[in-house]
Image: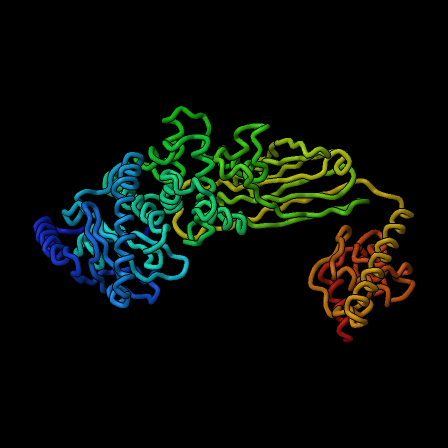
Length: 565
């Protein structure tokens, strides 16, 4: 985690020299084992929302000072203190022999000797909020005259809960990259890296150092788990949530798999930031692809992860060969004409995966968004043998487009679309706007009304059997027959909706309206042609526009009847 404090660089040279000299004097006051000093900390991460913590120096190495929260340290028995010191010794060995030389060779050096004139880095373990493992404050890299709450030293903060854990080396490496980034971007190039790339670069260090080689219990495993729970999180919008780290981590794994570590190192040393710096790194290393193309390929790889069609559509890392997400499912009725319309909102550089199954006939998908946006929409069709084909839906200047797939259901099993908004490429700082998009799927493949009646009757029989099973399971206290907990309709209902509780409620009410409205009287949960015809008769009876669509006006009337008004 990286914390950046805004500041004003206005200072007289003589005052600056005096202040820096004073900071050196202040620093030398606590450099021996057992020395105590009060450090400023970030209340957003501190477990008690403190702004300062009293600490004690427990270990000094050639490159590190280890401080821990004093009150916590003093409550530890001697045996526990000795155990902690052994673990800190192992951590310092790991840092000096692996973390430091490896990461500086890839990314360059931190500011050395730095604002305090001391080549050592200070590591403070203090109590942090749940979920926080560490952070870095760039404010510490300035003298107090510029940033009053600066600790005036190269400093990293780690959670005291990890002091005896292998997690400490992962967090230390992560935060150390933020220290390097400050020097390479802020100090050398006088520019501040966008948070998403700063965190993505730091999080990938676990793989650079081999900490993710063993998948079980690794940082990568944790990121995969979080990504699967929220795969549509924006890559570039940073809210300091675990899902932000997950998306950034999985995308960077794909990027480095295919384009190499120079994408991170060269973009770090660039005078540009974020997407623009990666595009510059791609050109520098001889690649024709742009960030935009790579992100689109990543959205495909995330859903199919199969190298057989193209290496662009898979992960190469051995721990991710079986990684796939589960897309949102959209069902179409298995027979007859039907349509489904879905409206979602998305942010720039978010993955959106929608899978369409069901239906039997010729499928048409129409996509619509707002003029002036830039959507990329790959779509993947899967045939009966699960072979897949990747194609791209082209949009016109009004952000509209459509595709047609013949013999859907007979020749093709499913369709996945993966729209991603790629309009904004720079200036990511805080919350991002959401933008709408709509896709409509329609199937033409009507069945005779006689078959429709058979289907409805079969569904009704299934429903009766379910109720009988419930009675047997619950000893006669199962669900009541029909109209159980049917008090209000909250959603629009229309042709093609299947097995929705509210459809049964609708059919139950239509049946109660009499044979002139719903002569078949089937309670199936399937909104087919018979239900649509009954709705039209209901609308005619009550003077409502006869569409067969249960929208706001029709629902209002139905809810009045259900409530007894």
